Image (cartoon, rainbow, N blue to C red; front, top):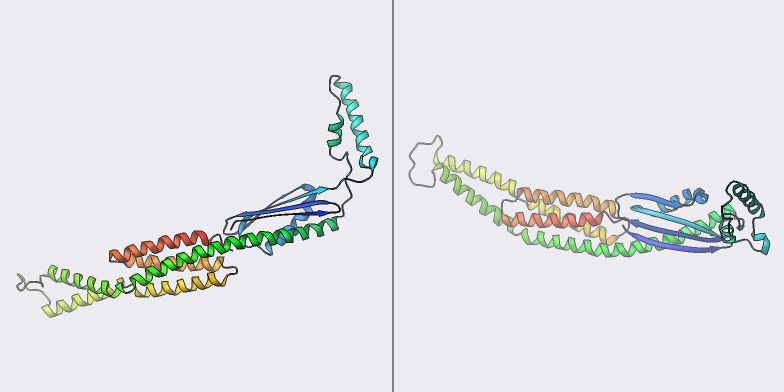
Length: 298
């Protein structure tokens, strides 16, 4: 799921800034943007994130602005400055027309202005504190989004429960109607719907009617979706319970989406009536909408 947080911490050695942001992903994918001189701190940052975040394509940026050394001339790195002067003389002996370095350029040269000495242990501790604060803000932002997503998902659950309640009373009636029409068509096809028959069947009329009843009953059982609707209701109840309980629900809801989709597919494949087929299509659309959002939850 998406999230964003930035935390800045001032220390005696300098300013630490940690920025965290993530976009939706089913798994945890970490990327770090850290300067080479701070690369040794990356394992601790990774461990801190893995300990509190489960999902998301996440980017962590760490920057550190060192404080300048105090005390007049001591702020100038004389050794580096003399080295630059020697190099400049050597180059200008070969390139006479080359312009000399300006004071501005010299002052901006990396290392000319001395920076305060930084203790790695102290820096590590300060970065760890900054990361904890940044993660607190990051998780809080994700919690707000998660609460909004939960309401969206609960509305989809309610819509599916309404569909199940609407079609459940229709199932026995629709199956009975289908069996009646199928029996009439079979009797007409066999010529049993008329008082006279041009040929002599191999089976008696009573035997043929009994065989028709058996076949129609078996097919009626195959198209009866009462069990599927009961399982759908149970899965929806469990989904609602997971959402209301909260916590790390992503993987559990992934599983529930699979189960809901399986039952909706079965309802669709067994639907011999337009009402049931339309309901199955509505259910699958709602499940697809939920599945897309569930992949964002942790």
